[in-house]
Amino acid sequence: MAVSAAALVGGCASPPRMRVGAFFGSPGGTSYPDPAQLGRHNYESASGERNGLVYTCSGGFIDIGHLREAADRTAYLSGLAFRKLSAGRKSFSFRVIEPSQYYVNISYPPGWEEMPEEERDSLAREASIQLGQYLAHKSLVWHEIITWYGFSSTGIFSERISSFSFEDTYSDATGVYLGGQALRDERPYDQVMTELLDERLAELGVQSPEFAHHAVDRVRGKWYTGEFYLFSHMKEPSLDVGLADGHIIPRLVPDLCGDAVPKPCPVPDLDAISKLGFTVTVEIDPWIWEKNAIYHSINLDASTPTLSPRTHFPEILQYISNQTR
Image (tube, rainbow, N blue to C red; front, side):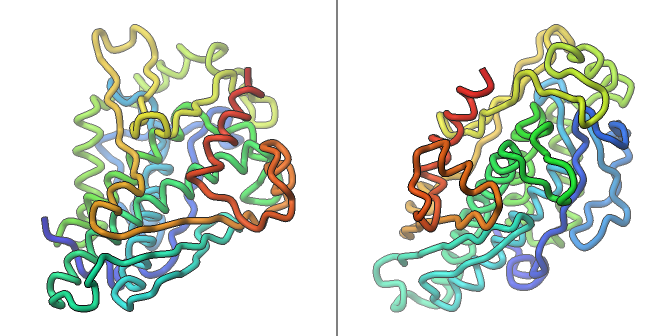
């Protein structure tokens, strides 16, 4: 399948912007947009977008803002990776939205420099999308992790209340998946994302705003308590980030859509990149006040400069799981 050169080379070169999530107990109230009127996806600004919480029969609750941001992280990091691969760089670093630094090391396929330019370019494009998806997904999991430990994007209130909310991880994975699909299309990224979002929601059986509101009523007091942010509590956080089987299974409200079954969403891993001949390692330098608490929870020496998503994320998630019980 063709890969959009415009999106990879320069179309999404500026860092992605943060979108406000439609979490339960939001101080501004939860927004339930009309799925048929979500507007045009816009990488550069909020103009034309309508975000909020929708309910789908096979995907459960989906935060449209989370999904869009996940797709844009994928587009940005894929473009960054493509530029580095095209230049033959063996390492690079970046930051996304959270104040943490990522370090990426790359080993190229045998005979890389001797390959015909067209073959090398094609391989770099696909590898960059695979890597962009992986980096975007891990950055989103990292966001959920650090907010569980008390990090605040605004610097005002801890976001632990909404960390690993039961719509977050599936919304993020769906956005990463759609972002990769959009980059493999030759048309403009925003246009393709707009179409893919509508198509995906239809596949998942998206429902009306009234239905979504009713779905929230069904889980109030069971999945979460409290109607205002500071007093809300996520009783059963969703810690499925796809580490066990490479998929995230959405949580459906029981008996709400008849015999609907959950539709798993795949999450990216480094194995797909390895199959293309590349070897990649990724490390994270937290750069946050919560670093010591995270290190302490998994008995990691405080002098260790970086974390490995592949090694340390399972340990951190196991710790959070034990604590939430």
